[in-house]
Image (cartoon, rainbow, N blue to C red; front, side):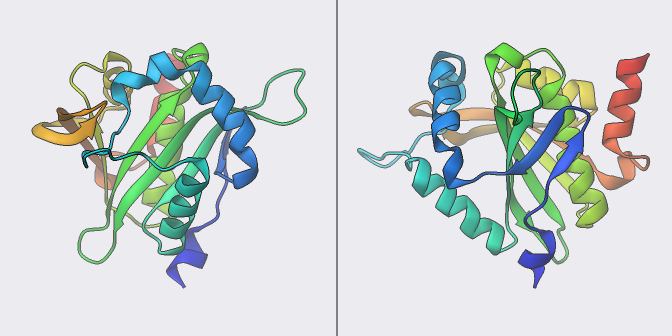
Length: 206
């Protein structure tokens, strides 16, 4: 029952749309990822097992859909309405994962954005949309984002949104072939009583 209550869902803010990822998105998703391979490579998760490989597209979508059915993840594509295109274009991906219910009511959020659209407010807007949905619609209490200390663009996203820096986690995740330290940022629902998206858009307008 939990899974059917929380997924699928589509979130919109202006021209930006967060929607479920599908098998039929493979061609466009692969093209965007290929175009951004150098941009994303330093921050890519890797498999620490000897000879370990990451799942292919179909395996990734199947795994994400399985997690969504278990109410432990929300796998979104970040899409944007673009003049001249009949359908919104894929400009990134955002996944709310490790959802814990019960006494924790917490989740972790990760994202990437097309380099060509970086710096246009897409990442912070998408993060704010997803966080608000988790707080208001799902009743979660805490959202966490873990970022490599060297990842300047992602650090700016959490700084813009007011996520608290909760410190450094040593060798936290296997990234680009090695165990890498991360800085952990978090926000609780009490810190944004009027909504994170509203606060972010308000700061942009000033």
